[in-house]
Image (cartoon, rainbow, N blue to C red):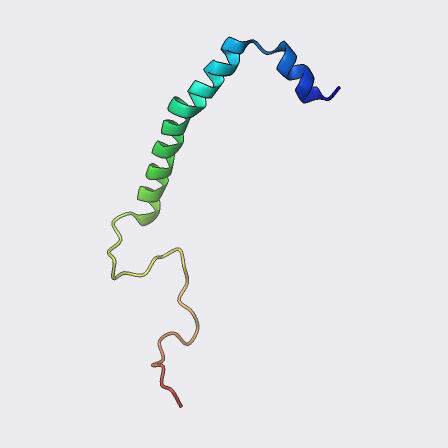
Length: 68
């Protein structure tokens, strides 16, 4: 008998439905809110034309690209 099978036999049906509802509603909303806050912190007040400070400028990127 695996541990999962033993856990399923001892779990109450009410606890299972509560856990499913919690994940479907509150936990999902909390994770969504956290990801929105992270996105706001990462983007900040950066303009679309400005480069991100998180990524360095590549060597030679200031040179014009000409097809030889």
